[in-house]
Length: 410
Length: 147
View 1 (cartoon, rainbow over the protein chains, first blue to last red):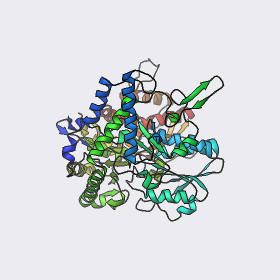
View 2: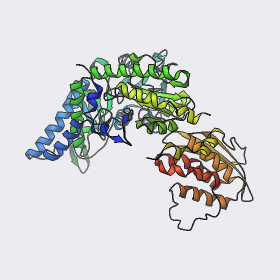
View 3: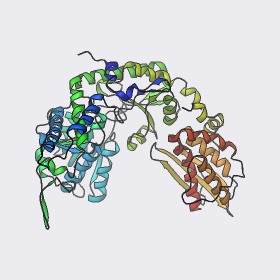
View 4: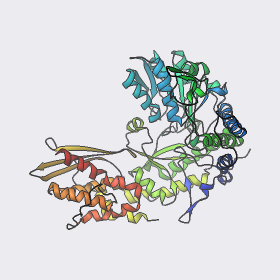
């Protein structure tokens, strides 16, 4: 299929907005993505026709609602090629999914002195839950360093993994754009007897995901970064691991039985889904998966590879030494998150200037402060592209940077 | 939509390019640190207080043009002033930023000129940047509370 980002953009009502007589150039999809009409309609339609409690009422409407909800779970399974549908656990987002793994698997299996290995390019959601286990359980953290071009430095990986219980890493850096060698990292973790936790919140929205091919143990991702609504995310885990884990939160839906002197857990996936979930949001996530699948994840990745290739060369050609782009230069190993330093202009000021042209970029530490310290910056500006960004959007960014340097030259 | 010229007045850019009172003061000067958790900006304010007067003030840290120029102007405005006058000035400045002190309905003394600080009033039109402008002022309050 021929990929036409400008045509796809028409599916996104918000991207049609005109502000101060200028079109919107949304380059902040690594932060959160916009929503196509198909997703918006699916959620409205569900609330207008089929909204009802799931899993707990006998009437027909509740059965319809439950079917739609479970159908979305099944779509999630297909989307990441998971072996079993009951391995798909709905969470609030990636952050909650990683906390679930840390608190439940980590809490039950880690003892003082046990080692968890992370990388230097993780965002806070894959750092702080493990720091919390350092405080509560006395575990140790080890960190995979980075190469000068922002890839993982795997020279001493086997040494770092020696004796480790968990290796938790991102499949794509939200700051550097780096795509990590997930399959190789999973194999290295298993070789050392550790389980492999893959943070897919940046990767899954943009690429074909196959947890079987990766041989991963856990995967996390968020709906809101992949054209779906906020408030819903996914934890996938191997059935035998999930079955052996204690529950994360207690409440309705996650129980087998409750007595005055205790409780038993429900089977998967309900065991990890306490309380009424965001039902409509799950329907929206299902619609987002339908939307992305119809376009084709391989087509989206191909489009984004072309976009980042063009952006890297356009920015470097126009601005040369005035711009420093962080992360790998090879589009084969990077996604579309593009963090950069422009002259001496502080990212906040840069973002303010770009906002005059309705260009939305993120300025800040990207919830990855350890990585920012490594880059020697308090903040960077980050443009990130998605399926609805055409090369015209790249040109808009390149052109709008002109002048920012003059205003703030020291 | 307000234009960039409302925000980036020449006097602001001057303080940004040529910040006043940069540096550090050794103890017994009081040091306070401020962070903007949204953007990672960090600032350190040092004050040397004697007989209720801020004799000297220094600023270190990193930030955007608004946070840096606001810190620079603040340092120039408070140096040599009494703690009471400075607390009033902080309240006035935050009032200009649309931030009111909760539970304090007493009238604000507006007899003294704000001087260069007036240039920052355009920040109010850019609500996201108010936090940048008040970072150094809140940090100064922390330092005063510890002096």
